[in-house]
Length: 316
Image (cartoon, rainbow, N blue to C red; front, side):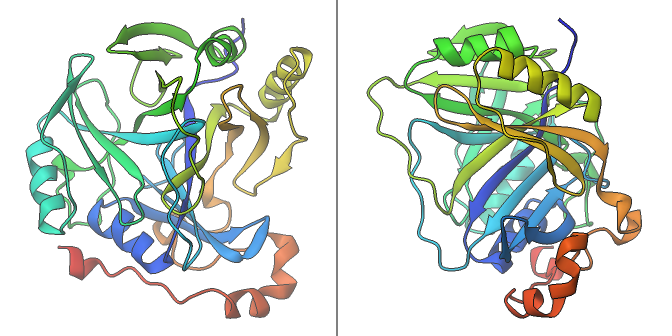
């Protein structure tokens, strides 16, 4: 089968206070705030994109921050942990840094022969940092995180499901994934088995359904090259009984959406055109950028958005 899917494009979460959201992901974790825009389906809510210097596919963690939103709960039918790659010897640094900012962090854990740590953001979002020497990407830093310890991009994601067989079929028969191995009830899949494309399934047949709100993942998006490959995967999915949306223009990529059998919302997003179409590379994330259809209402939209800023000096 032609390789239409090439790993993870982005992961989008629901968050609470927008300033705390920026403080955590750019201030503490050091990810670049690549874009400040709006939720196209709810224009009075921000949509933040965090990633590497360019917001490269495979690095982009995005959030819809709803100030005052109640916290969700982890459970089945959800993506419960987002894992980022860090350099092989970076975990001691991250344990110390997270503790410095009163983030409760695990000791070093082992999984599939690699060390990792686990923690939650202020909303309860599950995050892992996995130490690896298999990731050659260059992480972004504003300067408060040393380059040699900077987050490199996604490693993978954990799906918590009541059963795996139908989701496994979707991944391996129609989305270019292959089974990589099992460890302690965790089933691993990858397109090439490298950081940035890993999907783990943890089966909890008696688990309670997760409740989506602040601190939970809204959806995971998978990479495809362009409009043409997106149309091909859309047709493959439709031909095999999946209920796929029409193509939606998200300005920085095109998207289609569908629910995988376990209940997690999947998206397939194009690598093109990227985040530099409306800002210079060295200015990414500085202004509130709106899609063309929203520009006539800019004043009204901005009046409903909280003022936010990068407060990097507080996180040195």
